[in-house]
Amino acid sequence: MAQLTQAFFQKILAIEGGYQNRSDDSGNYACGNLVGTKYGVSAIAFSTWVNRCPTADEIKNLTTDQAFNFYSWYFNLYNLYPIENQQFFELLANNTMGSPANAARVEQRALNKLGYSVAVDGVRGSATVAALNDAWRKNPAQIYNLIREDWIAYLTSLNKPQFLPGWLYRLNIYFPPIGAAESLGIGALALLAVILFIKWK
Image (cartoon, rainbow, N blue to C red; front, top):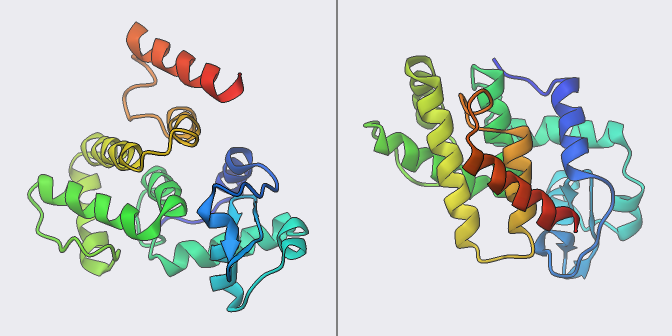
């Protein structure tokens, strides 16, 4: 079974960075107030964790130990630990950090494309998890890459150009397609270069 390893947690910290309170990021709001996000722990997710309205100072002062405890709780809340393969778990966890319900819907639609019959209800229940594990055992690259592609399609559909380059960057750097790392073509490398340029210019 998968777990929140220290290696994966350090990857999360590298991806998410420190404190930010962009007003155009809906995740930064809790109880109608602009509170912010730190280490990827958004104001709205933090409020669900502690069951109250957080303050900006609480988010700013969040420690890495607290963030680790948050993610331990968060990944359990969304039923990710029964995923059998660690690499697969980390892709699904990344998507869940973006939107738990939509991440589950992407998984469910991908499974149905492969011939499984699961409800597209946005809840990663036991039937969805069982199908995910079965699909991974049969063809890891197929299910992993399909979910990854469909997640990119979902992100693109949000029409948020200020965030899309960063979302694509994290997928290409930290969660590349299975089989792509050894055989990236010139076109893929060029696309990655454009993403990097947009992100860091």
